[in-house]
Image 1 (cartoon, rainbow, N blue to C red):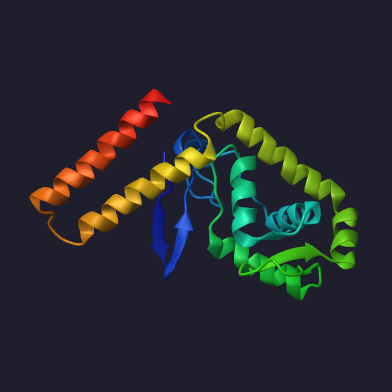
Image 2: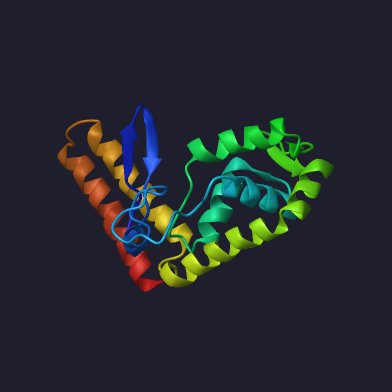
Length: 188
């Protein structure tokens, strides 16, 4: 169960994981073969991001993690969707940079953003209800943190193996590391 990316016009596109992909037809936003609908209708991501930022100031990566957790680890929006939406919300005056979060740009909701949320409460509730239904139907798998760690391990191996052939000593070291990690996971 992992993300697959497809390059289209130079931009990566995220696909759903596992059974979730079959339910929503794989590519979000495209209706196929009895698919029940897309995850986010037009404008829904704006409502969701604004709702999450209204709960507490957040930065982009924190928003991605929060959405992934709300979907039970079965969907994670790409940064290429999140950051332009944050820019739009900022241009609309609904969010502003939060005070001093160090290196990451966090956002806080403005009075205009709070008013917009209140005026669109029904739409926000619909988005949250659809997310909860998707998580209940398809979530319950491994914790999102475990899925992320598994993906990171696969990526690290690909990067290391992509640097060229391994010598006997390097093969032994990588094998030892992987065997040790596998043993620790099994004993946990």
